[in-house]
Structure formats: C-alpha cells, structure tokens
Length: 189
Length: 362
Image: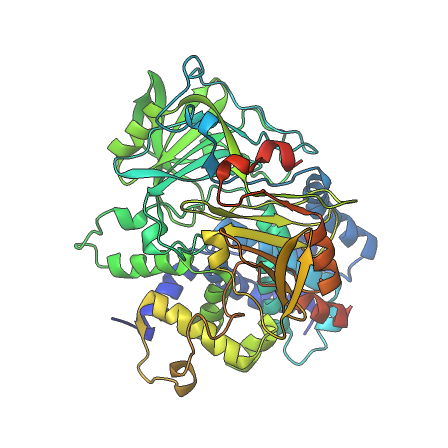
C-alpha cells in the first residue's frame, strides 16, 4: 500500500483514535498531521511492515506521550470542577458525558491503555509493545483505570483480578512514563 | 456500576468530536513521489518555531503552590494595599521566560482555597479547589478530593505571533451570552475544541488583554471575575535545579492541592526529556521504580535509586516527599549527576526556606 492510499483509508480512524487518547480535537488533529508527515517521510520502511497502521498508531501514542507535546500545550487546562455542578438527570447522555469527563481525567497512560484496548480492540500484547512494558503491566494499568471509572467487567479477567493494587506495580502509573518507541522508530529509519 | 458497554459508548462519543480529516500537505502538494528537501522544509516549518522557543531559557514554566508569609499579604483574598491596580501582563518574547511572579489575585469561591499557580506560554493561572487535600491526593488525575472547582486565567497582553495559532483569540470563542465585569463588556462562551466543552466567562481585564474565569455557575464566574485584582505573589518551590551546562527547556506543574508540585526539565534541543521532580502530594503519586535499590548520599542528602531503564530517586527521611524521575534512556549516572545539581531547601517542611521560583527557574 502506498502512503497516499494508507492516508486516505486511515486518516479519519487515526483522528478518532487520537481524540480518544488526547481529549482535545485540535491537538489530536495536530498530532495526527505531524505523525502522518513523519510517516510519509519514512514510508519506504513503514509501508513494508506487516501492520503499518499499528505502527502509525504507535507513533500517535508516542507523540502524545512525548515531552515536546506536553511542553507545547498551552491551551488552558480544562480539569475544572465538573463534579461541582449538578448533573442534569433529564439529559439522556448525562451519564455518558460524565464518563467521558472522567476518562479525560485519567492519567495519560491509563487513558491510552483503555483507548487501545476498548476503542481500538488492540490485544494486550500489542499494547505492551506500544507502551514498551509487559502485558502484566498493561493489565494492571487497565485494572486501575477501570476501577477508577467504576467499570464492572462482565467477564472478570483472572489476571486483572489479581492486580496487586497501587503498591504492587510501581510502573503502572505516574506522570513521567516514557515509552521506548523512539527506539522502535529508529529501527525503520 | 458501569459496564464495558458504557465505556464503548463514551469512547465513541469522544471519537465523534474528532474533526473531519483535512487535506494532508503531503497529498495536496505531491501525488508524486516525495521530494526530500520539500518535505523536510514543510516539516521544519512545523517544528522550527516550537523548537526555537524550547531552546529559550524557560519554555513553559509552572509555579507552585506556596506563598510566603510576606506574599500572603498579597495573596488571594488579601490584596496588598496599593497593589490592586491590575496591569496588563507582559508577554514573554519567544526566547524569554514568562514572568514567574504572579501579578494578580482573586477571591476563591466560598469554602475553597488556592490549589495551584501556573505559568505558561499563554499566561498566568490560579486554580481553586478544596482546602482539604488528603495524603496521596493525585494532583495529575485529580481525585475527587483534590479537584479544582474554579480557575482564573489571565492571558498575556499582545503575545508574539504564534505560528501554531495557540494564542487566545476572542473571535474564535463560541459566544453563549453577554455579561459585564467591572463595567467592561464581557461574554460567556466556549473555547474552540476545548476538551471539556465548558462554558467560561471572558473579559478584557486591560486594553487588549483577555482573561477567563471558570466556575460551577455563571454567577460564580462573575463573582470570581469581579474579584480579580492586581497583586504581587511570589511563588515558592522547595528545590532549585542547577543543571550545569543546561538551561530549562520545560517546566510543568501538576494540579496540586496543598504543598506539592512537579517540574519537568529537559535539555534544550533534546528530543527526549530529562527529569521530572515531584514533591509533596505530587511525589506521593509517583511510583518509586522497580529493581534493585541503591542508596547514595548526594550533597548530604540520602536517596534511594531504583529502576534500570528509567531510574528514579526517592529522597530518604524527608519531611516532604521528593521523587526525581528520569526519562527513558537516562542512566543512573545521569540521574546522580542531576541530583548533584539539585539544591533542596534547608527545611523542606518549612516554606519560609523555599526558593522564589522567579529567581531559581531561569
């Protein structure tokens, strides 16, 4: 598949995925634009991969988690007191909107894991490769995020049920997480 | 209790806010094979401006959280006599640090207090929230007990043109109502593409200089906006990084309740980040790393270092938790070198010994 065909096919999907992890449509659009520009430049290598879309999606995650983006973000932070307002119980989507708000308040890595797992239906092994961590860590991150969002699993995963909790996996959370994806990007240069 | 289906719905609702795909520069200009130089120029144009700004002394500077006894007199709710004339905030030039002395104050909503101060390339911010922050309050994710309930942001006046068009533009706010603040025309509206879609109050606090207030209700936003006045508040932090041969390329604060916060520091021009320093409540939320522990003493302070690829150092025996985190690729040796250049307040539990952020984050 050449780059143009890839972009035409996946651009919208990348944007939708980026919004789920970034939360800000404008920033998501900017990230996707930059990622596609970089992918274009390296398409001779990326296009030969078995799953170029997975790779480009990883680039989006990496770009979002990168310090440069955090530095350049100057939009006023939006985490202001939604819980202080009374939810409109007559609004049919009030609960969904409340959940969206809570998703946006998750630590970035938790949000990325949930978006990959439940929005993109990516297996934990691929999520682990994306984030540069173990599958156990992915499960732990997901378990914490689901607990924070008060999501009940219909079919409890024994692995996540065994999640040791905040003290048991010190890598599973935190603001300073870095992926090793730069290394992966280097591999296709 | 929610289910995974609720999560699916929420993610779909979030994804539905994605903009329609616009044309890609590479496709609009070349359906043919890319010309390397042409593409490089386009990419360079996108990245050059932020990179130049990053190489400046302080690209994004965040302050925390504590006001000295001296500055408390000018702190929120206690504007210093003669200092309440609100002036337009001076925008930093592209290669300058923002003004790290807070130049305004406001009266918090009833029952709340200041939870953090923040300085960035857009302006200065005061966040308000619950006064009671339990130990372990995660200022980044904002657990229920430490969330903000209100915020006032004053934008810099006449900021330099931003090639990424990140400067506040009143014309782009979707207006939902009109108001008046201190006799000046104001309006309620929503920022374009704001993640939360919250309605805020916008007004010009000085000619050509805009402000915004966010609170649980319009009435609260108006009260908050009316309470904004000039002040001089020194924001103090318990540590002073002195990276020899480096300058700060990135300093960020988290949301914070009580005495806590984070700084993020990178070497100018470096693709990868450098170190995060978290203290107080923010430090309690940082994992301490895996692997074998190594105890070291640096500048008379004892640290425990863990982690291989991403080592972290935890200050031992401190009255205020401090954690220094490396970014991936930073070695233990680099972390230790950073610790050698990190000055800590003589008494971390005594804010009177802390440093003035405006002085040490240069």
